Image (cartoon, rainbow over all chains, first blue to last red; front, side, top):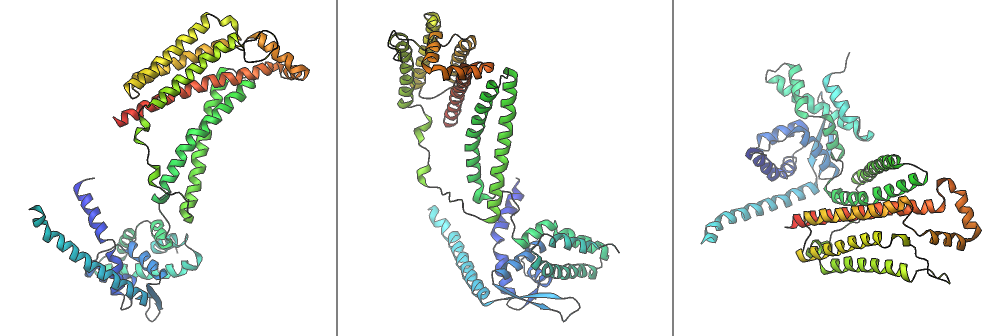
Length: 116
Length: 329
């Protein structure tokens, strides 16, 4: 495995959980598969369609998302919306993310002192 | 009209899904693919290319279907892998050996020659091993998909003893004790006899083996003693020890099998005595199976298989210990 490959693996590992959080936050206003894929990409959470679509179904099954068919337009679309439980999960994940960010910041702050 | 690429793709995804989810996934996926194609066409791509590109990006439909159905894409995952691997190794150590023993015995009793015995043993051992691997793996494949608990937990008590691989005093005492009992048994058999006959003792081993054949056996036993002491002194098995151990085991097996083959191992007087003591029924039993060499033919076959198997095990054990000692060093 060369250097780039290991780098990719590490980045992937770090990003893995963030897609769920981003979906939960974005879907506080209802959205559908392809539209969500676009918004995620615009906001810097580039993800593959074949990861996102099954993920939405999984979150729906876990009752963090609710869904509704919209047949007003020519193309029937399944709209997802973050449920009450989903909002609570998003809040928990967000505070965890903030705590981690702070913890990581203290790591870099303290490194020079530890060397002394 | 032939189905479009998109239609073919979607049916490939949905065909393996739960029927209740199929329509839902199909309609949603149709919309998602159509949206993506439309976005590309708006960018100026020809629609055929756009469709091709979008479907290529979505990847193998079977992977997408597995994502929808939450199905694992591996045969046996990390949850079961070690349990599967340990069980398989354990069974592969035991079952084919037992099968080989049984087949060798059965073939010899059925009057097979050496070639037939070897052929049967190799064939059956191989097919037993293949069956074992297949069925055990199948069970774990099902466990992986049903998520059942195997109940196997690791605990610190399972950590191997660090001294287990080095040669301890216990090994030495066991080896020497075994050899002393063996020598004692040979003398006891010759001069006191194991079986109360009411008259002079009848040895089990052929007295004609004394003195030369028995001396040869004692030389082998002394060599075994020296080997056991040498291994103890060195503290571990080495390749040299394993080679000597192999040579001794082969020599011992040849000694015993040659005599057994010539019919000189067991005292003929002893056999006569057993037949007489066993009465007419026993003798008839012998007659009934006379074609295959009678009761003694059966006993000789069993003894012969044991005489091959135990040295073979001894040789293997020696090499295994050598290998372990090497890894440790």
